[in-house]
Length: 123
Image (tube, rainbow, N blue to C red; front, top):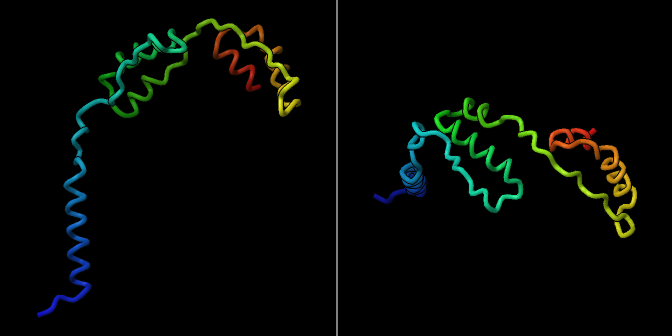
């Protein structure tokens, strides 16, 4: 008896599903918390933010899912920043955009925290 093409195709498809199902872990990570690890802050650009984030990771390590997200998404610390310097618009490809950015920087120069500065620059 000769096997038909459709039977052979069905057998190959079933074998593919079996191999794929064996290759993927079935809920092996369900009982564990999220895999966020503290970072090395020695080379971080914003060391205060890195340290604060490492504290949050340590405080939230026992939480899972929405609780973990809620725990991790805290407002940024109110670290003082120096406002960015004005750009040199003489060589800019888009003069209007550069001048508008400089005007926004000038208007927001009194904002000393990162959060205040971002809100001012967006508005």
